[in-house]
Amino acid sequence: MKESLYDILKGKFLISNDAFNNWRFILFCTLLAIFMIGSSHSAEQKVHEIAKLNDEVLELRTQFLDGRSNLMKLKMESTITRRMVTRGIKPSDVPPTKIVVKEKK
Image 1: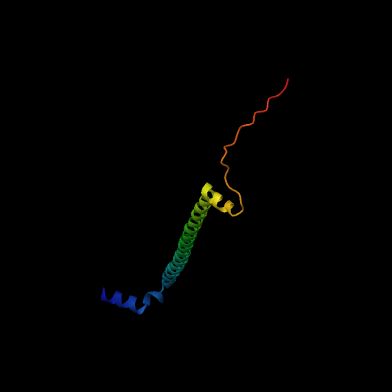
Image 2: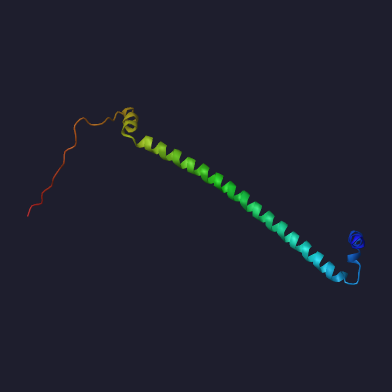
């Protein structure tokens, strides 16, 4: 048991007669590790991009709500009346009347 542990530590399994199989396995494990690292890096980039896009969506939603509330304020009758007073236009005191046109036969 001690001898086999020393052989592994010295690297004799890499220069023995069946070393070709060991080298193939080591190469396979190395390529697999490189692929896993690349895949992990790609996934992490996507996570960062998704977080950035979520922040952008929240910012745009805030801008939309702010614009909509400003529009609601501008459309209010009191706001329109206040702005038109400076131009000399004011709401009518007389309510509108309905005009009915009858066709002659």
